[in-house]
Amino acid sequence: MRKKFGALPPWQQGLLLAGGILLVLAVIWAVQVRQALFSALAPFLAALITAYLLAPLVNYLERGRLSRPLAIAVLYLIFALILFIFCVRVAPLFLDDLEELARQLPAYAADLQGFLHRMEAGYHRFNLPPGAREIVENNIDMLSTALVSRLEHLYNFLLSLLNGVIIFLLVPLLTYYFLRDEGAFKKALLYLFPPQHRRRVIAAAAEINIALGAFVRGSLLVSLAVALLTYGGLFFLGVKFPLVLAIFIGVTNLIPYIGPIIGALPAWLVAFLDSPLLSLKVALLILVIQQVESQLIAPVILGRSARLHPLMIILALLLGGRLFGFIGLLLAVPAALVLRILGKQLLLFWRGG
Image 1 (cartoon, rainbow, N blue to C red):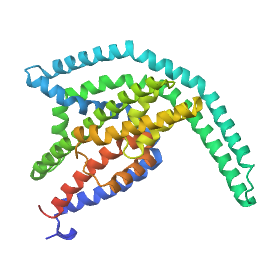
Image 2 (cartoon, helix red, strand yellow):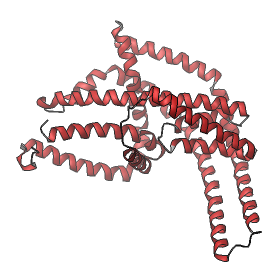
Image 3 (cartoon, rainbow, N blue to C red):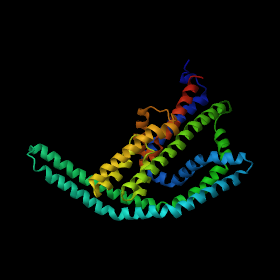
Image 4 (cartoon, one colour):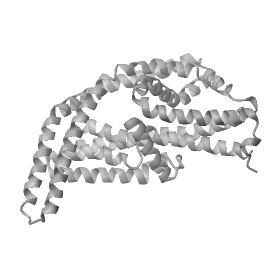
């Protein structure tokens, strides 16, 4: 039978009340000061995610009779070599594309405005009712303003991204400490719970680790495959800035449902401003890649690791995007997955299971 609140022990009542109050305060706090705090904690969050992704490799090396600091050092050396190859072979191409794209953004904005003005001049040849004509004119003006504004925001985003690279140089150092002291962190968190409930906490943490690890690592592999396929296709078609556009498509592919659309728009727009025929080819290319991803790549790598209803995913995306912007969209589904597992464990606890 379901336990009544009044029948719970006093410490459980206090824990539930404190949890409810903290949840309300957390929501208010997140809405009010999320940007400043998120900027300050961003390196720690990035380091924590990186440590979570690398922990299985460190544990594997440690089982091979390496000390944990040495296992982390070996892993860092491997990634340093990969990063060196990336910086030598890929980064110059990416930075060149990025610099050229930043220079071309004002010209693209002017081309877009010219295209919209031609649309406005074209529809004047039709005898539309005055009310319909006013609606069309207002929508064209709004679309023109919105597109130019988005392009300007993109330029500012690129500049802020380059300025923020220095901050994230802290990430490898923070990741090292998270990986080295993983056992101590786990024990400290476990001691926050009463002894009789620690077994349930360990079970919930193990379930979260299996589900979240499979989803996050699988999503990264799928997005990497999509980025590589996109780069090859864009380069073959002769689209400008293929590396920048492919990386953007790969990152946005981590966002369910709306991510592929967000990622495809810049590539299609760059191709359209070059040639309408080229934009059609790019649209067909992205459509084919998305079909390959959804029908072949994702089922093999991801399977059913998320196990979330589409409505829950959409709600998580709306909340994450509203509270934390683009980063919130990326983290929305993993957070929803963790909350689903925690909710199931709390329900079992409430029912006395």
